[in-house]
Image (cartoon, rainbow, N blue to C red; front, top):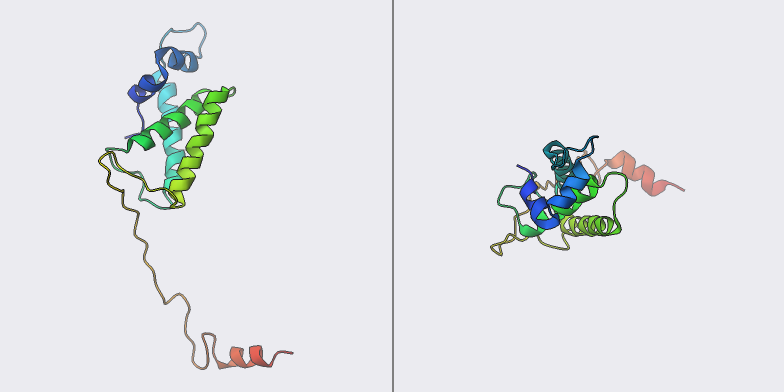
Length: 151
């Protein structure tokens, strides 16, 4: 399930804008082209997942925080503008990426609409990453002797 839907885009940007951005064939059909919207929403999900995947198990489960839906809408809208985004669409897109970056970096929590902070994924930490060898230090006596006696 995408983070944002056609209904979310419509409520934020209106049918007229979506029609203008998606009805690309000639002659124009005069309607919102759902396939174009779905592609932009899938692309927006990819962007969200690439950022949040560093910190969360993605895709996130529904219901999604309203901030995340807003960001997904702004990213999808930018993609819908294709080759000539408006200044507003570009600004909202850049703001969305900055928000995603802040969440991914742990500077902002991802907070659900109920006020709960979404849990981050657990990563296993192991202290056995460095192999131990016989002798002194982690690399053995031979290495330690050469290191210490190096000119």
